[in-house]
Length: 266
Ligand SMILES: NC(=O)c1ccc[n+]([C@@H]2O[C@H](COP(=O)([O-])OP(=O)(O)OC[C@H]3O[C@@H](n4cnc5c(N)ncnc54)[C@H](O)[C@@H]3O)[C@@H](O)[C@H]2O)c1
Image (cartoon, rainbow, N blue to C red; front, side):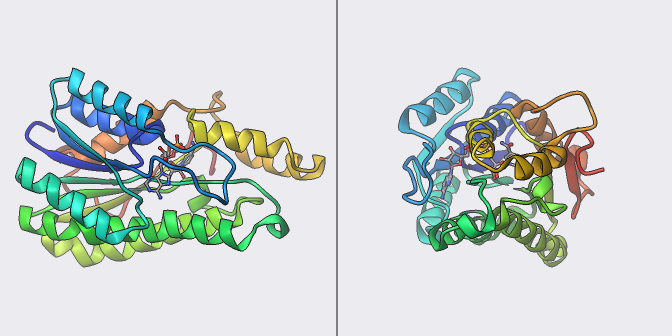
């Protein structure tokens, strides 16, 4: 990753922070964004200014530069402005991690219109906005690598997360179409599909599962269990897949749906 510049959304904590740090460890300069405020429709704390400061400190401790900004991926203009700022500072853009996401677990008839809209806008439109803001710079660079964060819920049906499943399947759709459209520009587009990852999002989802009926809990538990003996993988396990897809080691890999799922979807 020496000399490369990576843009990461949802970088204040969890997998986004881990991707930023992992890529920086290998030499990348980082442009990082996070919403750094909460949604009205979700009763859990999203990334904070303090958490983003920790991401900045961890990247800088590796001797790598980072530009970190408070940006909502639903805001296409703000995303474009920060990517433009980062490219002006660092000279070019090579890698894009469309990672920001939210999730809440509830039965379909408890899903409010706001939860539906916020989930789809963040995950699906946010991924699209990230592409719109970054692809012109990757083209100007003569190529690059886009890594979109999916989920096991992007591969098969999972109950009690209907808006999330819909949005994550949509992310795969964007990635498949764009992998073809951008291939002549040497821009690769791949998706990663983690099983449960040990982050605040997973902690919140576990609390939500406890509120479901016993039947619903049973139904969901069997779908969330992994074949390998691990309940939640570490964010770094996902970052190692991101690193491979970001690097020239995967230079002819595009359109891959890369599962880091401990066998879950088998
Ligand atoms: N944790 C899991 O079990 C798991 C499993 C599979 C996939 N995922 C996906 O991985 C990605 C990262 O999640 P995580 O586990 O690190 O969760 P997390 O909650 O720890 O981190 C997500 C980050 O995204 C930020 N964010 C949310 N909405 C945003 C917006 N509109 N604009 C900018 N930033 C925003 C949050 O503030 C937070 O810092 C998400 O796309 C999630 O759906 C998570």
